[in-house]
Length: 165
Image (cartoon, rainbow, N blue to C red):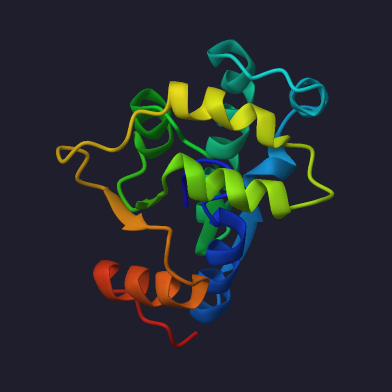
């Protein structure tokens, strides 16, 4: 589950995992401490900052697969190169990108409390954002404007998943 901060990755992703009887992993929990501290200070991450985080996510995908578990992992995957890295060599993995405009994302972040990601960083995410292109066949784009339950239903339908655990 990918998208900018405020797109509902954790909420919709958690609900999707619950409906499917799968594991849910919030990619924020895989950030190195230095990344969290940097974002908490209001400093945007660079590609170099994201590299170890993306490796941790890839390692987690591999560990879940090796354990025979299906999972939903939420992370931003803002750039095509990030999505390519996470999907590369993992033919069974699919990605869902939650598309949302800046205004709605900002509104959601302004209403959120207790998270290290400050709403002031949202602009940097939209600057870095490369929305999925049609040739990214293993990336499904879904509008994040709907309610999380509707988003989960759409993902299950569009990916042909079986919601009975």
